[in-house]
Every structure is written in C-alpha cells, then in structure tokens.
Image (tube, rainbow, N blue to C red; front, side):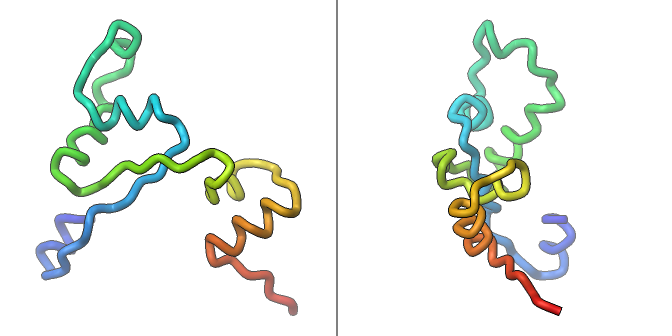
Length: 94
C-alpha cells in the first residue's frame, strides 16, 4: 500500500504502532537475537525491516491508557467511555 501511494505521489509519514509490551517493542526495534528469542520464526521479523526502512515507528503506551483495549477486552464503564472518546466512536440513536 505504501509503495502504491508513493507511486501516485502521496508521501506518507511513518505509521505509528503503539504497543504495551516492552519486550515485543525491543525485539521489533533491535536486531539482537538472544537465546530466548531464537524460537521466533523468521517471517515475524518483517516488522524489523519495516522499522529500518522508516515506514513505521513503534511507541510504548501504558496498558492502562491503551485505547485498543476497547476492541479486545471487557471493560468497565469508565474505561469504556474514555477509550470510546479517544477512538472517536459515537453512539448514534435511531
């Protein structure tokens, strides 16, 4: 998609990827292979290539402030309303 838009004259900024797992962010950002990370299949290291080409940037976001939890977890009403607003979702009445 990035290549297609580039050929059409649209130059995109790096795509931000936010994660709440510092281990996965470290593995994605650093080409270091440790004894514990050798089991990861090579096809999952594609994100390293994308980060090196500066097509994406990985950021840490605290688990309590991660709005994508709205889509993956059962939340209480306070977090639900907070994350719904952050994602720009609205409840439309018929």
